[in-house]
Structure formats: C-alpha cells, structure tokens
Image 1: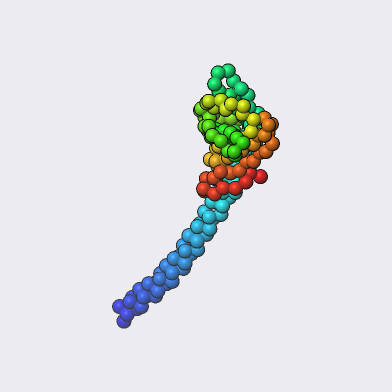
Image 2: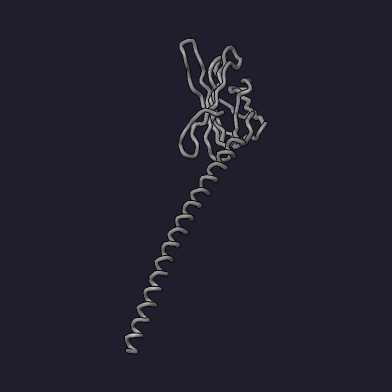
Length: 179
C-alpha cells in the first residue's frame, strides 16, 4: 500500500510539473513573439530616422555659369545650395549644336566633397567647346547617407534657363525627384 501511495504521489508531482512546463513553454512563446515585434518596431524607427536625416541633409549642386579659363579648358563653378554636403562630385557637359546635342565631355576630375553653401571652380573640361553658349551640365554626387543624386543645368545663349535635381538612386536602388 505504501508503494502505491508513493507511486500515486510521484504521478501527481509529475502531472503538476508537466502543467507548469506547458505554461512555461506558452509564456516563452509569447515573450519571443513580443521580442520579434519589438525588434521590427525598432527597425522601422531606424528607417524613419534615416529618411529624416536624408531630408535634413540633402545636397543640391548647381552650376553658377561657365567661365573660360586660360589655355584649352574652361571652368564650371559649382555651388551646393542644399542642406548637406555633396560627396564625390563628377559630371559632364553636353554641347548643344544647331543639329541638336553635340559632343559630351566628362569633367577632367571629380571633386571629393562640397560642403553646404560651398562653391568650387575646379571642374575643368577639355577641350574647350568653341563658342559654348548652349547645352547641359550634369553632375552626379552622393549625400552623407549614401543616396546618389543627379542635377542637370541647362544653358541657352550663355545663361542658365533650366535646372532639375533628382535622386539618381537611394540606398535601396530606387530613384525619384528631389523635393
């Protein structure tokens, strides 16, 4: 009889332990689910913060005219009118001829950076387009967050007549207009 009582007590203890184990597993699943939801919410907050940072530090590089230099080149004064630094600025000049677009000349070198409000006259293009008065200047550059921008300045009769800037590609590879 004593052995039956001990066996019964062992079975009751085992059943109670099993019930607590089941409750523990269910609680652990709920904690794991909450942790995943919290991590996802944190990731979304980081994405929003990065987008806000990009909105606060958008570079916009414009061409301030075209100046003839000495020798067989000319200078393209660039100015950053945006709210953030422009990095690795490169570009090209496409001359407009009477028959449409003419030759496309790349900048002789890129500019490592152009701070907010900064300007530089270092974008030399070879050789000098004879009588350059009309055409486009395209500049590509990066923001500090890694978004890739393209700005296009259009000239007619030596004066700036048009400007457009757009996100060439963001960190995800999508493009769009700069707002």
